[in-house]
Image 1 (cartoon, rainbow, N blue to C red):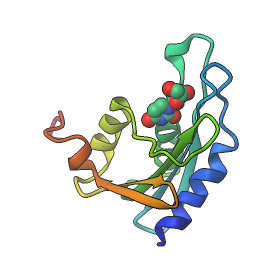
Image 2: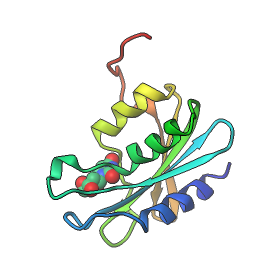
Image 3: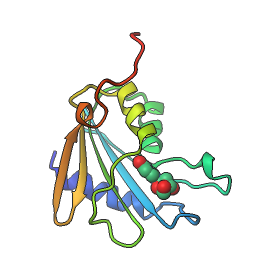
Length: 131
Ligand code: THU
């Protein structure tokens, strides 16, 4: 799977963002081990704390369809342009730590290129309970 294909899916998903309060629209696209892609966008709420991040919307869609094995996520976000890397928030990193392996890839649009991290780089020493 081409990284740019995943970024394009995130850019498409961002078009559906509901972000009337922040004006900051985010799109995410998750690649599963079986090749399936699930997308999400942020969904804000006037009770600000109830806002859903794009990444966790995408994970919710994937998990609820029975997916359990994830390879990578592309994230794009911004008010007008999406050229500055949109780092996932702490809550989304913790969600990834729950559902993904340490080498899960986080792919961010960075100008015309990409920035890429592993989950263990973005959330080292993550909290978790062995299940
Ligand atoms: N947001 C995301 O969708 N994902 C993140 O990882 C960081 C923040 C959204 C939440 C809110 O709607 C807007 O970006 C500004 O914080």
